[in-house]
Image (cartoon, rainbow, N blue to C red; front, side, top):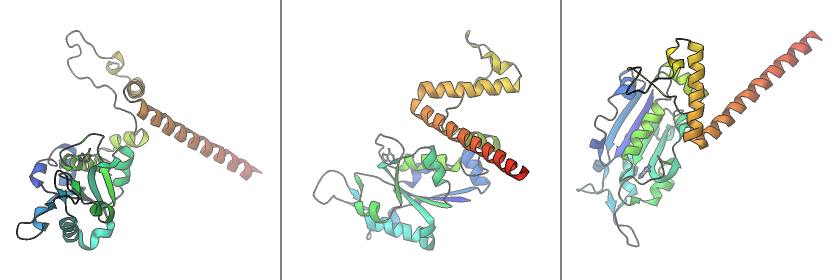
Length: 254
Ligand code: ADE
Protein backbone atom coordinates (compact mmCIF):
# COMPACT_ATOMS: atom_id res chain seq x y z
CA UNK A 1 0.00 0.00 0.00
CA UNK A 2 1.18 3.53 -0.78
CA UNK A 3 0.20 6.11 1.79
CA UNK A 4 -0.42 9.78 1.02
CA UNK A 5 -0.75 12.49 3.66
CA UNK A 6 -1.78 15.88 2.34
CA UNK A 7 -1.28 18.89 4.57
CA UNK A 8 -3.32 21.94 3.60
CA UNK A 9 -4.94 25.08 4.98
CA UNK A 10 -8.03 24.18 2.96
CA UNK A 11 -8.78 20.50 3.64
CA UNK A 12 -12.35 20.99 2.37
CA UNK A 13 -10.89 21.60 -1.06
CA UNK A 14 -10.28 17.85 -1.38
CA UNK A 15 -13.85 16.75 -0.64
CA UNK A 16 -14.65 13.99 -3.09
CA UNK A 17 -11.35 14.38 -4.95
CA UNK A 18 -10.27 10.80 -4.28
CA UNK A 19 -13.67 9.09 -4.17
CA UNK A 20 -14.25 8.26 -7.82
CA UNK A 21 -13.01 6.05 -10.63
CA UNK A 22 -9.53 4.56 -10.49
CA UNK A 23 -8.54 6.34 -7.27
CA UNK A 24 -11.81 5.52 -5.48
CA UNK A 25 -11.42 1.83 -6.37
CA UNK A 26 -7.73 1.80 -5.36
CA UNK A 27 -8.65 3.21 -1.95
CA UNK A 28 -11.48 0.69 -1.49
CA UNK A 29 -9.11 -2.14 -2.39
CA UNK A 30 -6.57 -0.86 0.15
CA UNK A 31 -3.92 -0.22 -2.52
CA UNK A 32 -3.59 3.42 -1.48
CA UNK A 33 -4.46 5.48 1.56
CA UNK A 34 -5.09 9.22 1.17
CA UNK A 35 -5.60 11.39 4.25
CA UNK A 36 -6.00 15.14 4.20
CA UNK A 37 -4.83 17.06 7.28
CA UNK A 38 -5.66 20.61 8.28
CA UNK A 39 -2.53 22.67 8.98
CA UNK A 40 -4.48 25.16 11.11
CA UNK A 41 -4.51 23.22 14.43
CA UNK A 42 -0.69 23.19 14.29
CA UNK A 43 -0.62 27.00 14.11
CA UNK A 44 0.88 29.29 16.72
CA UNK A 45 -0.93 30.37 19.88
CA UNK A 46 -4.60 30.57 20.70
CA UNK A 47 -5.48 31.72 17.20
CA UNK A 48 -3.49 29.00 15.47
CA UNK A 49 -1.61 31.47 13.32
CA UNK A 50 0.10 29.83 10.34
CA UNK A 51 1.50 32.81 8.44
CA UNK A 52 3.14 36.18 8.95
CA UNK A 53 4.30 39.24 6.99
CA UNK A 54 7.53 38.86 5.02
CA UNK A 55 10.73 40.27 6.52
CA UNK A 56 11.85 43.22 4.42
CA UNK A 57 8.25 44.06 3.57
CA UNK A 58 6.18 43.20 0.55
CA UNK A 59 2.73 41.96 -0.37
CA UNK A 60 1.09 38.87 0.98
CA UNK A 61 1.80 36.58 3.87
CA UNK A 62 4.40 33.88 4.22
CA UNK A 63 3.66 30.42 5.67
CA UNK A 64 5.74 29.94 8.82
CA UNK A 65 8.12 27.07 9.43
CA UNK A 66 6.97 26.18 12.95
CA UNK A 67 3.38 25.03 12.22
CA UNK A 68 4.65 22.99 9.28
CA UNK A 69 7.34 21.36 11.40
CA UNK A 70 4.77 20.56 14.10
CA UNK A 71 2.39 19.08 11.54
CA UNK A 72 5.08 16.86 10.02
CA UNK A 73 6.27 15.73 13.46
CA UNK A 74 2.74 14.93 14.64
CA UNK A 75 1.54 13.24 11.49
CA UNK A 76 4.67 11.31 10.56
CA UNK A 77 6.47 10.83 13.89
CA UNK A 78 9.09 8.14 13.61
CA UNK A 79 8.06 7.47 9.99
CA UNK A 80 9.46 10.85 8.93
CA UNK A 81 12.67 9.35 7.54
CA UNK A 82 10.85 6.83 5.34
CA UNK A 83 8.42 9.44 4.06
CA UNK A 84 9.07 11.53 0.97
CA UNK A 85 8.00 15.04 1.90
CA UNK A 86 6.96 17.15 -1.08
CA UNK A 87 6.16 20.84 -1.26
CA UNK A 88 3.92 21.92 -4.15
CA UNK A 89 5.24 25.13 -5.63
CA UNK A 90 5.65 26.67 -9.10
CA UNK A 91 9.40 26.76 -8.34
CA UNK A 92 9.63 22.98 -8.15
CA UNK A 93 10.72 20.45 -10.71
CA UNK A 94 7.91 20.00 -13.22
CA UNK A 95 6.07 16.72 -12.73
CA UNK A 96 6.34 14.32 -15.67
CA UNK A 97 5.71 10.61 -16.08
CA UNK A 98 9.28 9.78 -15.08
CA UNK A 99 9.00 11.76 -11.84
CA UNK A 100 5.63 10.12 -11.14
CA UNK A 101 7.24 6.71 -11.61
CA UNK A 102 10.06 7.60 -9.24
CA UNK A 103 7.58 8.79 -6.60
CA UNK A 104 5.58 5.57 -6.98
CA UNK A 105 8.64 3.85 -5.51
CA UNK A 106 8.03 5.44 -2.09
CA UNK A 107 5.78 3.73 0.43
CA UNK A 108 4.70 6.96 2.03
CA UNK A 109 4.43 10.48 0.59
CA UNK A 110 3.50 13.65 2.44
CA UNK A 111 2.41 16.60 0.32
CA UNK A 112 2.53 20.05 1.79
CA UNK A 113 0.36 22.49 -0.15
CA UNK A 114 1.97 25.89 -0.52
CA UNK A 115 -0.27 28.97 -0.24
CA UNK A 116 -0.28 32.74 -0.14
CA UNK A 117 2.78 34.68 -1.25
CA UNK A 118 4.97 31.78 -0.35
CA UNK A 119 6.51 29.54 2.22
CA UNK A 120 9.40 30.44 4.53
CA UNK A 121 12.64 29.55 2.76
CA UNK A 122 13.72 27.43 5.74
CA UNK A 123 10.81 25.06 5.11
CA UNK A 124 12.10 24.49 1.60
CA UNK A 125 15.66 24.03 2.79
CA UNK A 126 15.20 22.01 5.97
CA UNK A 127 11.77 20.38 6.13
CA UNK A 128 10.96 19.07 2.67
CA UNK A 129 12.73 16.54 0.46
CA UNK A 130 11.67 17.98 -2.87
CA UNK A 131 9.58 20.67 -4.51
CA UNK A 132 7.20 19.83 -7.32
CA UNK A 133 5.38 22.02 -9.81
CA UNK A 134 2.64 20.63 -12.04
CA UNK A 135 3.37 23.03 -14.88
CA UNK A 136 4.65 26.44 -15.84
CA UNK A 137 1.71 28.51 -14.68
CA UNK A 138 0.74 29.98 -11.31
CA UNK A 139 -2.12 28.44 -9.34
CA UNK A 140 -3.72 30.16 -6.34
CA UNK A 141 -2.39 27.40 -4.15
CA UNK A 142 -0.79 23.98 -4.19
CA UNK A 143 -4.03 22.03 -3.57
CA UNK A 144 -4.84 21.21 -7.22
CA UNK A 145 -1.20 20.18 -7.63
CA UNK A 146 -1.50 17.74 -4.70
CA UNK A 147 -4.51 16.08 -6.38
CA UNK A 148 -2.59 15.80 -9.63
CA UNK A 149 0.41 14.22 -7.90
CA UNK A 150 -1.70 11.65 -6.01
CA UNK A 151 -3.54 10.74 -9.22
CA UNK A 152 -0.48 10.43 -11.47
CA UNK A 153 1.49 8.43 -8.88
CA UNK A 154 -1.37 6.12 -7.85
CA UNK A 155 -1.92 4.96 -11.43
CA UNK A 156 1.61 3.57 -11.40
CA UNK A 157 1.16 1.50 -8.25
CA UNK A 158 0.86 -2.22 -9.11
CA UNK A 159 -2.75 -3.37 -9.12
CA UNK A 160 -4.30 0.09 -9.41
CA UNK A 161 -4.80 -0.19 -13.17
CA UNK A 162 -5.67 -3.33 -15.07
CA UNK A 163 -2.54 -5.28 -16.06
CA UNK A 164 -2.98 -4.50 -19.74
CA UNK A 165 -2.87 -0.75 -19.25
CA UNK A 166 0.15 -0.91 -16.99
CA UNK A 167 2.15 -3.02 -19.45
CA UNK A 168 1.41 -0.58 -22.27
CA UNK A 169 2.34 2.40 -20.09
CA UNK A 170 5.59 0.74 -19.04
CA UNK A 171 6.64 0.06 -22.62
CA UNK A 172 5.59 3.38 -24.13
CA UNK A 173 5.47 5.96 -21.36
CA UNK A 174 5.94 8.91 -23.70
CA UNK A 175 3.32 8.25 -26.36
CA UNK A 176 -0.08 9.91 -26.41
CA UNK A 177 -3.13 7.67 -26.60
CA UNK A 178 -4.61 6.75 -29.96
CA UNK A 179 -7.93 8.20 -31.19
CA UNK A 180 -11.03 6.48 -29.78
CA UNK A 181 -14.43 6.09 -31.47
CA UNK A 182 -17.75 4.70 -30.34
CA UNK A 183 -21.27 4.43 -31.77
CA UNK A 184 -22.72 5.74 -34.04
CA UNK A 185 -20.43 4.49 -36.79
CA UNK A 186 -21.25 7.58 -38.86
CA UNK A 187 -21.92 10.86 -37.05
CA UNK A 188 -22.94 13.90 -39.15
CA UNK A 189 -21.21 12.32 -42.10
CA UNK A 190 -17.97 11.64 -40.20
CA UNK A 191 -16.93 8.01 -40.17
CA UNK A 192 -14.55 5.77 -38.24
CA UNK A 193 -11.19 4.38 -39.48
CA UNK A 194 -11.98 1.13 -41.27
CA UNK A 195 -9.19 -0.73 -39.45
CA UNK A 196 -11.15 -0.41 -36.18
CA UNK A 197 -14.17 -2.05 -37.79
CA UNK A 198 -12.19 -4.90 -39.39
CA UNK A 199 -12.30 -7.31 -36.45
CA UNK A 200 -8.66 -8.17 -37.29
CA UNK A 201 -6.86 -7.76 -33.93
CA UNK A 202 -3.34 -7.54 -35.37
CA UNK A 203 -4.45 -4.91 -37.89
CA UNK A 204 -6.20 -2.91 -35.14
CA UNK A 205 -3.11 -3.07 -32.93
CA UNK A 206 -0.92 -1.86 -35.83
CA UNK A 207 -3.31 1.02 -36.55
CA UNK A 208 -3.38 2.02 -32.87
CA UNK A 209 0.40 2.13 -32.57
CA UNK A 210 0.69 4.09 -35.83
CA UNK A 211 -1.91 6.57 -34.61
CA UNK A 212 -0.14 6.99 -31.26
CA UNK A 213 3.15 7.71 -33.00
CA UNK A 214 1.57 10.14 -35.49
CA UNK A 215 -0.39 12.03 -32.82
CA UNK A 216 2.61 12.29 -30.55
CA UNK A 217 4.83 13.54 -33.37
CA UNK A 218 2.20 16.13 -34.39
CA UNK A 219 1.11 17.39 -30.96
CA UNK A 220 4.11 16.77 -28.72
CA UNK A 221 7.39 16.62 -30.68
CA UNK A 222 9.28 16.79 -27.35
CA UNK A 223 7.64 13.56 -26.15
CA UNK A 224 8.10 11.97 -29.58
CA UNK A 225 11.86 12.50 -29.38
CA UNK A 226 11.91 10.90 -25.92
CA UNK A 227 9.86 7.94 -27.23
CA UNK A 228 12.23 7.41 -30.17
CA UNK A 229 15.23 7.50 -27.82
CA UNK A 230 13.52 5.02 -25.45
CA UNK A 231 12.68 2.68 -28.35
CA UNK A 232 16.28 2.82 -29.64
CA UNK A 233 17.54 1.99 -26.15
CA UNK A 234 15.15 -0.98 -25.94
CA UNK A 235 16.28 -2.19 -29.38
CA UNK A 236 19.99 -1.94 -28.62
CA UNK A 237 19.48 -3.73 -25.27
CA UNK A 238 17.63 -6.52 -27.11
CA UNK A 239 20.37 -6.74 -29.74
CA UNK A 240 23.11 -6.91 -27.04
CA UNK A 241 21.13 -9.70 -25.37
CA UNK A 242 20.87 -11.61 -28.66
CA UNK A 243 24.63 -11.23 -29.34
CA UNK A 244 25.48 -12.38 -25.81
CA UNK A 245 23.23 -15.43 -26.23
CA UNK A 246 24.87 -16.30 -29.57
CA UNK A 247 28.41 -15.95 -28.24
CA UNK A 248 27.68 -17.99 -25.10
CA UNK A 249 26.13 -20.80 -27.16
CA UNK A 250 29.22 -20.72 -29.44
CA UNK A 251 31.63 -20.93 -26.53
CA UNK A 252 29.67 -23.83 -25.08
CA UNK A 253 30.02 -25.69 -28.40
CA UNK A 254 33.82 -25.24 -28.46
N1 ADE B 1 1.36 26.42 -6.60
C1 ADE B 1 1.12 27.47 -7.42
N2 ADE B 1 1.34 27.15 -8.69
C2 ADE B 1 1.76 25.86 -8.71
C3 ADE B 1 2.15 24.96 -9.73
N3 ADE B 1 2.17 25.32 -11.01
N4 ADE B 1 2.51 23.72 -9.37
C4 ADE B 1 2.51 23.36 -8.08
N5 ADE B 1 2.15 24.15 -7.07
C5 ADE B 1 1.77 25.39 -7.37
